[in-house]
Length: 417
Image 1: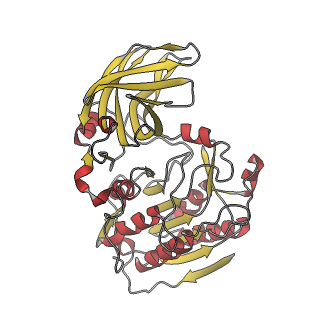
Image 2: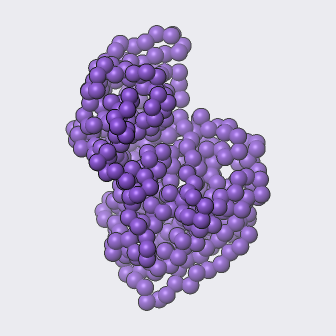
Image 3: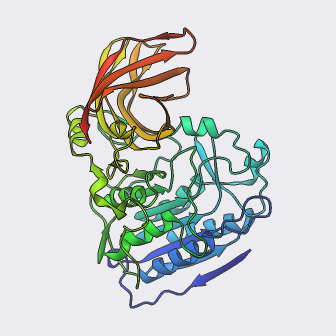
C-alpha cells in the first residue's frame, strides 16, 4: 500500500472560486484478483487533474481495507465545510443486492462472505456530506470479478427508477443535495480495460470532459455518456445519480495533447451515428425517463441486423390497460447480441393491482435470433420479444415461462434510425 499527498498550487482557481478537496483511490496490484494495469495510470492522472483544478488532493494507491477506510475518514474531515468535494475510485468493485462495494487489494472474492471485508461505497456519501457540492466517481466493474456469482442478479437490478415528479428515486445510492455520482458502467456489467500503458476508456472520457474552460456538473453525465458510448462502441453505458437542481460550474483544465473523442471508436465514421431526436421527444410527451446522451450506431454496410438499430415506440399491456413504452437498440452484433435501453412507466404490483414504483429505464444485453430480439426485462420469468416485419415496424409480445403462453402481439414502430 502506498499513500501520498499532491500539493495544490494556491494560485490555481478553485471550484466556484472557493475551497475544495479531493481523494483519489487507485487499486491495481491485487493479491487474489486480476491485476488492473490501467489503474496505475488512471488514478495518478485523475489526481493531477483534480490538483490542476485547485483542489487539495490526496492520492492513495494499492490500499488494503484499513488504509481505504482511513483515507475516506480523512477525506470526510477535510470535506466538512468545504465548497466542493471530489472523490474518484478506480479498481475492482462488486455488487450485492442494492449495495456496491469497493475491493481492497488484499480481498479474496471467491465466496459471498467476502462482503464483510470490503468497503461499502455508501461510506463515501456519508464522508463527503459536509461539503456544499460533491462529485463522486466509481470507475469499477459492478459484478463479481472472480466467478460471476450474483452477476445475473446484479444485471437484473440495472435500472433507474423515477417518481411522478420526474426526479430519480433513492435506492441504495440516494445522493445528498447538490451531488453528482457517476458509475462507469451498468449494474452486472464490466468496466472495459484500455490498451496497456494508456487510460481506461472511462478515465480517458472523464478527463476529456474537463478540456473546456468551464464544466457544468449538472450536465456532465450527458456529455460523458455519449463520449463513452462512442469510444467503447456501445459496450459501456454510464449510470449516474444527479441531485443538482441548478447549474454548478467548475473551472476546466485542458490537458496538453489530449485528443477529442473520435478515431478509435464510432467517432471514426460519424455518419453512422444515429441521433435519437424522435425518441427523446416521444419520451418527453409520454412522461418516460430516458438518460441524456444516448446515441445508436448503424452497422457497417447495413448488415442483416441493421434494421434492429434505432428507437421504437410500442405499448405495454398491463392488467389495467396499455402503457406507452420505448425501446432503444444502441448497437447490434450480427446474429449475436444487441445492447438496448428500455423505458416504461411504472411496474404492476400484483398484490395491490396498481402500477407502482415510478417510471423506469433499464440497460440490457439482448439476444438476436433471426428477425427476433429477445430479453428478460427484470428478475422474473417473463421474456420480451420483438419480431421485425420490415425495417420500420414489427410485433412485440411477452412470453411467460410459467404458463408457457405468449401475450397478445402489439405493433411497434420505428422513430429514429
